[in-house]
Length: 192
Image 1: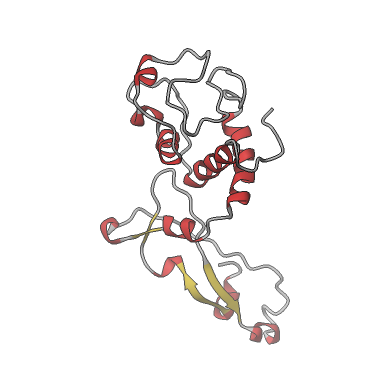
Image 2 (image 1 turned 90 degrees about the vertical axis):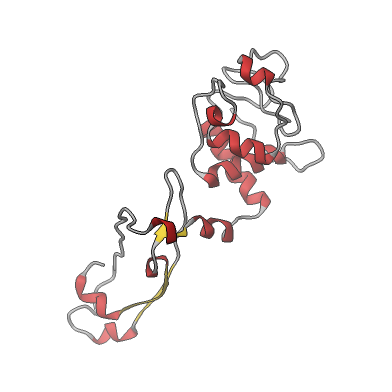
């Protein structure tokens, strides 16, 4: 905490740091800290005029990883509404997926409009790798999540070189693709 002198007025009520926690490779999490600054700070001539307090954390390799709680639990608790997730997913899609994929046209990757419910390797007019064309997979939200997490691990021999390691990004991209399905409300902007 900076400046050091404010430490005696800074009271943490709840913090992810109170016990050992686990954050896996490629995983992201919002880590809550509930605190208050004691109003007595205002009467301390040494620190009463400070307007900024910086709280920072350093993560270390766990000495007891098997007993640590998974920080991913905070992500589940803070899941946004379907609409908010789909709106964010549209933005993530444009940045992460839009270079290779379009919703209505094949690019270097197949078109992804109405992908949910479609068999893998079956977008019209796209030349798939043999393993993907032969895969007996139907694109469901769960299968898309596994695919985006690691395409080559999900379907051995697949050519897609890119993964989406962040679980929130995957969730939101999938929510966006779901929102485009026939009979569901759509988001207004199309991917460039």
